[in-house]
Image (cartoon, rainbow over all chains, first blue to last red; front, side, top):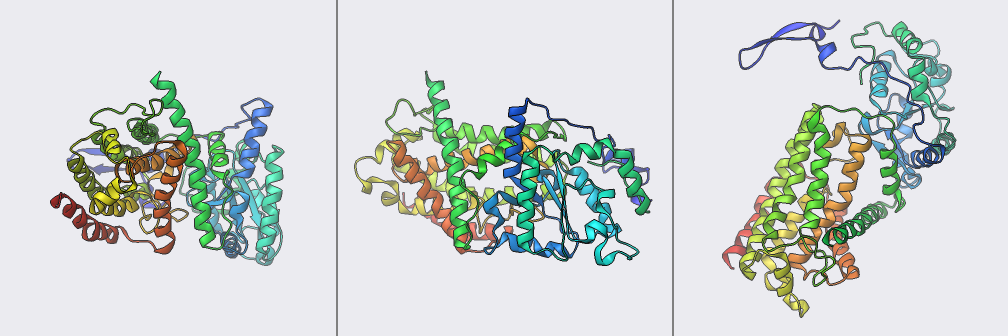
Length: 213
Length: 296
């Protein structure tokens, strides 16, 4: 564990000494709970329609696939037409695109970002690397199957998939959300222990609480 | 009987604000050769954000931040007459409403600063520092222009100022006191969160600014305010400088044209850093405002 995360005594500017325990003070340790559809069917369908038509993507490029997302913001592909927008903060995002290979170091950040997103949230695995490791299948520091660590709703296969494939993926994602089948956040909460065990198996310097939103 | 009419005003302005924001975004997108969002996209985003299942809080002020922001926008709208000469849409205007309006312009920003500060995110703190310094600098020329106009018409009532501009287009303040209007319109650019003065929010970049931690229904409240507040602010500009509006179509047209001014500047010029924008306001806008008061 890093020294700045240890429990320690701190002297404030007013001379008072107090105890700081970063893992307890700065994070929330409460495990995620299953949040089922709270409203009657017609309202939930309406919300699902709104969720599908307003997809906010977390602007976090994890691998080489991130380069395929940039053209979507520009005139040639212009994903804004379809209600797809990018947000710079996980709090406001609904969709997390794991774009390509995911090194163990980045996985740690991806988990933290995913846990800060608000439910309902979705994950798209972009590129072959998220399915079976792709061309990094024998690499010592990338994960092979993304689905073991985060609940994936949709894969877009290819190495690399073109922006058109991404647009088609967004359309499929919309269908999944509208049908009410995009319950990845609940799946994560239900199988929380299994996901944490998998994550801890590859992340050796686990210096954060189990759940940190 | 005033309250239902005030709510009607609010309803009209909210819808107009949403459509106008989307239209301006579309115009900016067309300049970049994109099609941009559909005009109804802002409604869907709003519904989506209200429909989020989970939300977390960082404390009481975090709750109150968006509420303050929204009450700043609604208060600004409701204490200024929307339509001149209409009993229905004069809202809660009174003899000294100009001073109250000036206060409300700043109210939301301060509430937001307190709320965002409690979220404890460093990007929020950076955004607040940038936002407050820039809004303060942009407010200076506007306040000077307002004092100049108040001196010119010898009144602090928005209704009386609009009344004095009726009759001919040449009676508008923009022709009778062009220096004050010039200063105010330069200050206006700084408060609309469009380029070159949008480094506070810097949409879609890593430091999104004050709302970094806001999500779900908190963000939805702020989105609602983003529809109301610019319109409310432009109502003041329209009433003080451009002869006010005597009917809703004139209101929509004038407000849209005023907004278009900031959008036009925004698509042409790149972004300023905060110290550059402050320097720009102090060098180019404030002297014009001072001059307009001196000449008054």
